[in-house]
Each structure stands twice: as C-alpha cells, then as structure tokens.
Amino acid sequence: MTTRVKRHLKIRKRIIGTTQRPRLSVFRSGKHIFAQLIDDSSSKTLVSISDFELTGTKSDKSFEVGKLVAKLAEKKKIKKVVFDRGGFLYHGRVEKLGKGAREGGLKF
Image 1 (cartoon, helix red, strand yellow):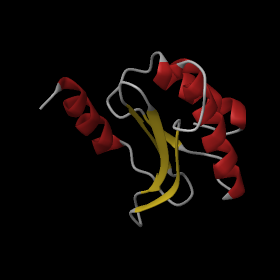
Image 2 (cartoon, helix red, strand yellow):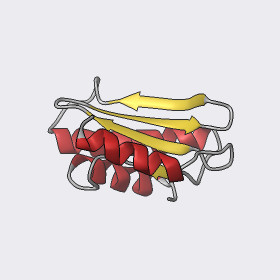
Image 3 (cartoon, rainbow, N blue to C red):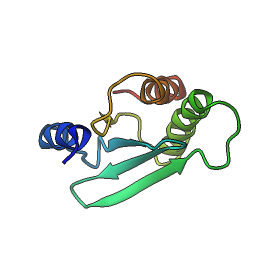
Image 4 (cartoon, rainbow, N blue to C red):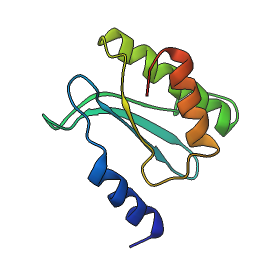
C-alpha cells in the first residue's frame, strides 16, 4: 500500500459527505485531474468533471476544473461541501482546484 493510499484511508475515516454537504473528492494523475461531488449517505455521485476538454497548463486546467465543479454544484443547489484531497498534499494542482472551487462559490 502506497503512502498516499494510507493517508487517504486515514482521511476517509473522518470525512463523510451528506446530502446537505457532499464530499468534493479530488484525484490527480500524472496528466489529468478529476473532481466529484459524492453523497456518501446514498452512495451516489452527484457531479463529476475532468480536465479532458480543457487546454492550458496542468495548474490552469486544475483551477478551471474547480470553477466548473462549483458551477455544476450551483445548478444542483449545493453551496457547502467537504473537501477530500484524496491523500494528496494540499499543494500545487490540488490547491488550485480548491481555489477555483472557492472562487466559483463553494464553501468548505
């Protein structure tokens, strides 16, 4: 088990998404970044987005993904979320996604 996976499991013990405050889950691969809003009480993904269709640098795309997640959440009348960084450090692209989501109107 990698260090990131161990960190992620520790984080997931404490972070739970509800209907009122879904979990904003972030996954970062070598080339792309993905974000989902998940309601853990009903085990459903409410919103999902990736950077496949965006252009620019990886950090610019991460910021845009954060703004797009906030826009899609606003359509579903979601304003507050719980941020799940997925075991990644809150630095670089994960931080940019968080800033984009905050700028888009999400509170966490």
